[in-house]
Image 1 (cartoon, one colour):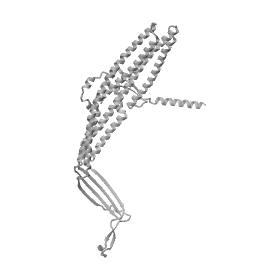
Image 2: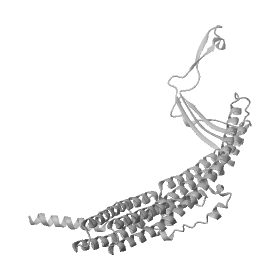
Image 3: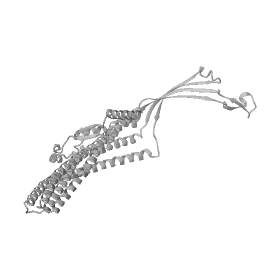
Image 4: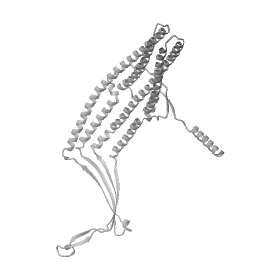
Amino acid sequence: MKRILTLIMCLIAAVKGYSQTQPGPQAYNFSIQEAVDYAIAHKDSVVNARLDITSADYRVKEIIGQGLPQISGQATFQDYLKVPTTLLPGEFFGQPAGTFIPVKFGVKYQSNLAASASQLLFDPSYIIGLQSRKTYKELYNRAYTRTKIDVIANVTKAYYQVLVSNEQIKLLDANIAQLKQQVDQTTAQNKQGFVEKIDVDRIAVQYNNLVTNRENTLRLLALNYQLLKFQIGMPIEFNLTLKDKLTDINMDADVAQIAGDTTFYKKRIEYGLLETNLKLSQFDLRRQKAQFLPTLSANASYALSYQNNSFRNLYTTSFPSSYVGLTLNVPIFSGFQRTNRVKQSEITVQKNQNNLNSLKNALGLQAEQAKVVYFNGLQSLNNQKRNQELAREVLRVAKIKYQQGVGSSIEVTQAQTELENADNSYVQSLYDALVSKVDLDKAYGRIQ
């Protein structure tokens, strides 16, 4: 029995010591910029966009490689189990006309070793492909920028959501504290016979509702932290706290200066992407037209042939052969295929140009909408701040009137409810204003 107890104690000590040596979850304390930097380094969509850029580099190298010498080697071996037989006219051997003599040409074992090379000398399609490689890489770089901008906007909004939830909890804590004091005072007055039991019950109901609301908000806050960690690509088991406060955010954006920029659409990555697509379609049109021009390439080959009836002596004697030459390919007629491909490319160029013009108008409309929403959000936020102050003042007066016996508990309850509604409206207006600020910066190309 003692041995069993000793063994159990040793196991407990070992487990405890092991758990103490294991590192706990990593902890981070991020500002908004640090959260954005972490997301750019770890968010899977951004990482994949960077991989696309690397893949595009290899694709460009592949295209360049088409103009470099192409060298290949070949080795063959044949064992003729039955050497082919050819019939020769009998006259060759002094036989009567019309007769044939079977003759076997060749040997049992044959082998060939060959190396060939070709070099592209002139191909307009290849030249145009080289000219477009910079634009091709630009397409993936801008796609990476677009992904990064989306991640920055999403991370910023998620960060703001956590800050707003924390602000909501502060407001709830303040209301709960003052309401708890009111509950205690009303309960004491009820015991002394100054107020009725129903007055205590009314305030208790409000207090319980506030406590429940706070618990629900705490759970939502935890969820908002999880959402923020997801947006920045952080494992959800890591610990994350925030440095920035709501007071650190400048809500007074210089909208007049932003609105004065009439070429803001050129800063939008969506416009840049369509510009790049237009350039690529123009290169493709030139490539299709180049299909009408001839191509020229050089080629060379060197081969060794081995033949023998004995496998052992097969590679003792070789018969070399070699050549160099030029190949000129002149397109003459392809059933109008090249012409139709050119027409299709011309239509693609026109469509991309139309899309670019349409996007310019759409971005202008989006910017105007973002500006209006931002102005409305600021106005609503300022209005809700004033409503908060008024609701607090109404509650203060209602309490004084109730304590002096010239007011009712219903007035106090209604004033408390109005303050809670004002706080909720303020929190919602605060989040809406913060989100509209992000959307405004994005609409005017200020997020890069």
